[in-house]
Length: 169
Image 1 (tube, rainbow, N blue to C red):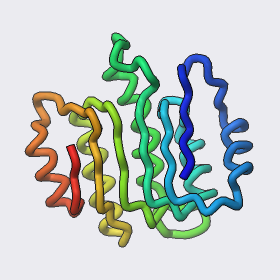
Image 2: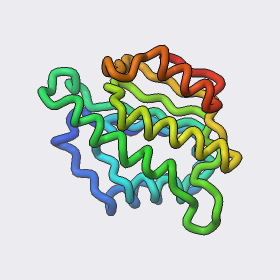
Image 3: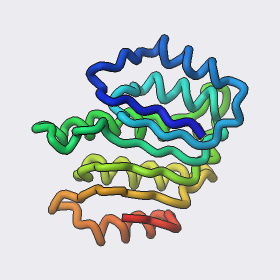
Image 4: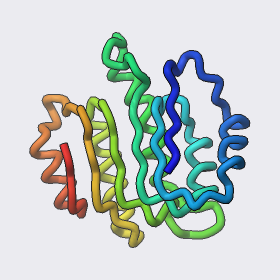
């Protein structure tokens, strides 16, 4: 288990080179679980590098930086931050036709405003992973809210119908 946390994303100096150095440091670790906060530091290329380096990940937890709730643009912040992860999880491994991190069974999203785009992306991800034989067993939404046009109970119901056995809100 690795937890990557920064007090303030604005002070962090994380780029793809730094990220690859960090991954290289843990290259021999049997990493199966990772927690990253703030998630906005991680780009699509960085997620791809992580998934290539550690294809046996079974649990991912992400969330915003501390103080996120006090940001005026918090909705846009998390939308921007979460899409690279969801996009990377939709992708295939570089060296095969297998979906990336095929052992991924649990995804925890912290302090997220779920809008239509995010809901559709998550549902698409669940369906794709099921089709590829890599089902998601558990989705946790910690301190998350659904926008009025989504409806929390309806979204949870859609996730369960799509194949997620355990949805925690």
